[in-house]
Length: 163
Length: 306
Image (cartoon, rainbow over all chains, first blue to last red; front, side):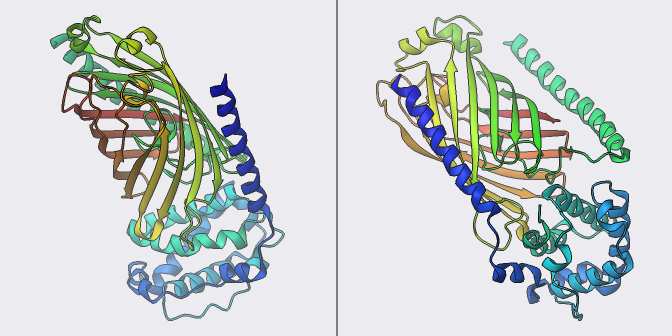
């Protein structure tokens, strides 16, 4: 009898923790961390990765396939169909180029501002990552190099996922 | 003996074949869903980030649960898996089936049934050749905080707590060998971190348990009958989107006077051609089990997701 009530207590406690954690997840993010997530941090240690991506021309070619994938994917298409896709591709090339310490400057808008009101959820964000992975595979970018870029992009979920 | 060997071989070939059939069906299904114009409502987590099914039915590696919630559902979705596992040891074998549901990337509920066959050892101990311990396990895991994939700008891991309720069907034999109960609960807390830049996943689990040989030999014993914290760890290296290799360690208690119990180790390779199927092969060292030392063998598991 005692054993079962102990069991129930542990589960109840776990549920409480989970609720607290859930509340924490949905709490509004402080301005500063949002701004940090939005900026594209230049990382000098990623210069070799920039070369593995084929430099700036490699990024331009990659972005063409990436956008094609996004448009072909029913999960991501709605977010791009009415957008200026050529402009987005240029911005993405600059952004990736800066993250990988390439000779570029990113003059694009604040990540949070651009994505505000788009109602992007986690599923759509993950779908975008998959479409990027597919494009990187097509361009024979080594898996480890892909992950080094994705590790820099992943924290941007805070600015992008609003739903 | 020869017959057992043959049975095992048949079983393993069957498992491999079913894996192939399932994966081709799933691949076909994947092609279909890609051309489907409706928005999918499940399967949106990234490949292999949900782990595979561990030996007690929870999402994890082969031996240890991870903090991940099983299935490919995100916070808006439900995911589900079914699995078949076979462990082929020199003097025993284990057959296992089960299923799990992952709810909104928050709660995982799992069921597993283990059938541990003692083969000739059963005869030697007077239980009868092929004597089998059957254990049912119901698991609940709750993610407390953290995101194993996306939190790449902090050292914070994904952390979960869980319980595995286990019930063994051989109460009489368990009492005879010195176990204090035929059922028990394992409580665990685990932390899992993906170092994406290094393509490396690391997991640490602290389990509070009284289980002898994970419960196949009952719970508690003549030597010790209290909960002990045991450490479990996994490392996995991602080779590609579809392949991972890794190793695991699982510390175990030593409650029974009749036979010492060793810690477990394995080295594994996992293959997920798509989100609907994964195949895990491991070489597992389970040490001494009752009167037999050096129980090392093949662990094979196939998982199908919906």
